[in-house]
Length: 218
Ligand code: BG6
Ligand code: MG
Image 1 (spheres, rainbow, N blue to C red):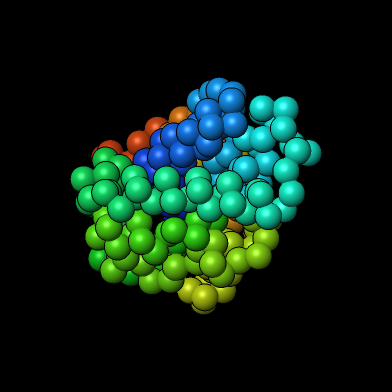
Image 2: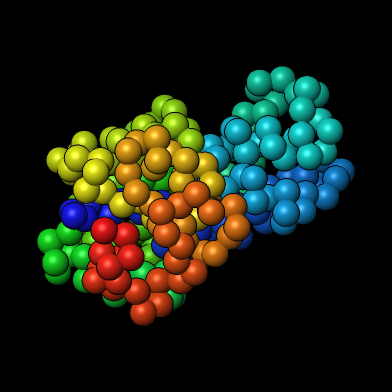
């Protein structure tokens, strides 16, 4: 039985992964090196400071900066990221997402957000998605980043659901691992080979329904 769907945000409901990448790549350029899209893959699902470490490692600069300098760099990246986010509209909700969320609501299935982002609230508001969520767990509410299961465990707990009836939708390997560690099934969204450990794969939400989810996963 599936009673609750828990959604990652970046790269699942909206394509903010490209904005995260552009903001990190701009920081890398300021530091004098290129941060490639392939290297950017590893920042998906990972907290802001852990992402900064990935960027610095790519430039061979992992031990060069103090904690304060790193905080300043992360703040600069976030300001750049928010420049993109503050221009987002509902048009950037990925194809098929809205009808699927609306169907879940209509059928009384729990709809929960489980995101590592501290910017989740502003993105949900800009894209008109907030009202569709019963519970929202974001980076301001959790202390342990994915692949730790905290974000999904907390989401299920707030929604009053057992892990066994929850399904997590994720575009990042760290998120799929977090779901598994939380005792939940998972849907790997977007078709990356890095999501092979998810219970099932979903290239896009277009044409996807709750019935198809139940048929494929239950
Ligand atoms: C995740 C993204 O959802 O949130 C990561 O996949 C990002 O790339 C993380 O680093 C933290 O986001 P933010 O918005 O708090 O910097
Ligand atoms: Mg994601």
